[in-house]
Amino acid sequence: MLALSIGATRGWSQATGSGSDEEDEASGSATALTAPPDPKARAQWLQDQLNAAIAARPALAKATIAVAAVDLATGAELYAKDADRGMNLASNLKLLTSTAALGTLGAGFRWRTAIYADDIDDATGTVKGNLYVRGRGDPTLQLADLRALADDVAARGIRSVTGQLVIDGSYFDGDTEPPHFSDQPKERAGFRAPVASLGVAKSAVTVTVEPEPGSLARVRLDPDAGDYVRLGKAEVTTVAEGKTRVRVEVKPKKDHLEVEVTGQIKMADGSYDARKRVDDPARFAGEVLRRALAERGVKLDKHALGAGPVPAAAKLVAAHDSAPLAMIVREMNKLSDNYVAESVLKTLGAETRATPGPASWADGVAAVRTYLAGIGLAAGSYRADNGSGLYAASAVSAHQLVTLLRAAHDDYRIGPDLVASLPVGGEDGTLAKRWRSDASARGRVRAKTGTLDKVVTLAGFVGVHGDHLIAFAILANDIPAGQRNPTRAMADDMIDALVAYLAAQK
Image (cartoon, rainbow, N blue to C red; front, side):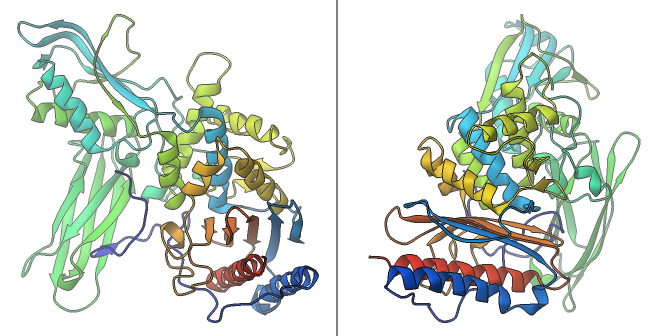
């Protein structure tokens, strides 16, 4: 099942860093707003409220703030400020990726991971040749899925393989780094994981530290990738008092990654988790699958990993299909998952290439561009370089983002699934803590958040009565240091005003 909300978790978790959204801090108006009943007065009141939300924060005077809001029932523009200025969207870029994916691939699209074999001797259970695993870019493939595939291989009666476990990664090309990920080359956090045709656990290893009374803490790696990811130094002291301070370093070696874990963990904190990206996602997945096969009695040589295409004559042995795209997009947007977004982008490239061959990042970007041109975003009028919004990957105006939201809402093949994928204010995802105590706005805003070092964005829909919605985009760039939360509070005040505006309509 997909985890579609962020709740309190036991223990500590390493911060994901400046490159990804974190769950936003609690905010929202303490007092509910009431808009005038007269339509003309109400329109002016809304203008005044939105202007006041900006003016009330003089510390943001040097920030670049762009806003657009449109009544989807009437088509009227309710508010615009610098709405044609190209802005860094941060993770709001995922709205472009998910809309293009739903519109191009369809909500029911699934990724298939399959295992094939050369000649099988049924009498002895021996594969005379290779066992192949063909990846198709499934961004949600987990250890449990590879174990299920291994179960199916064993159930087929296979007990040994004379050749190799060959990984067919030809769906994507060999460039595993999405555009702009090289802007932060030393960052090893999981939010910056590489993307390949075959990847497991989102191409990151989870380092878990569990305290042990009176001794060193227990450290484990998940999933176990054998010799590829090795635990070297594991020296974390369990303490009764003081703060948990754990340092996790991943050191690339000639043929493997070495993990060193040091520091201290407070007994009462329970556990500490950190996700670290791997460098070779295909090998990582292959090693995990090889261990799963071995646990089920399928013998492979210890150094029998290979790479190459599945031969036409190879026999299908087992297959795993992902959840449908509509569900994957929910995980992507609710939790602002960069790995899923970049996998979706490259899948778009693979599924729309005019000629056969591995998909490139340029293919994915071109597929998004083609789709967006059909809904009114002309090529060359904006910039969207990757699928996740990490780093300086976008320049899109508030008007363009609202145009996208309007088009998605008006297309029944896309709108319901896109809206369902968005965090709900005060309820789940990256908006779980916002408007939690605000009865007027809670549950009435469905929007995508975006956060980078100097960027805070929020875009989506506000609704009160039935299907009478407002599409909005609130984009802030060049935020001064220490002003993220005030910027979010500004956006929240704007949302409160939009909710009051709709609530006053009869």
